Image (cartoon, rainbow, N blue to C red; front, side, top):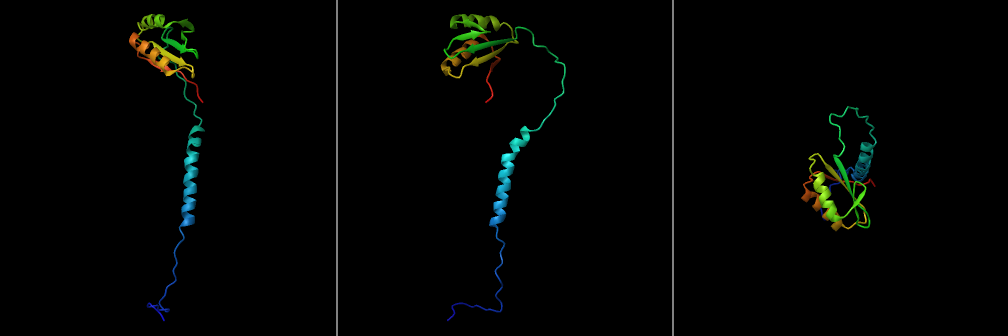
Length: 135
């Protein structure tokens, strides 16, 4: 007893391409390219041309403000208090080309760094850079 029209003479074989292996291979290639691209970019060796500097950095255009782990302030390797720091930063701010480099120990609370930044901004120093080390 048959429930459908099954004509054995006209039945064509069901042939489909199995897409699962193709998708697997494409995903593996995608992962390889995603992982490999940063390595390829970092491995490019480029020798940059050397040129003479058009503007030499003069003495006194860079000052270093360091905050050690205990929270003590050091301006150009000289210990200073917070009151003295404000006066020194105001004196340094007279040079418009001054760049202040801020070095803070990783154990220093953000509050101490924020206070030092605020003092530098109040003194009129606008070019402030943070010095860090690479991991």
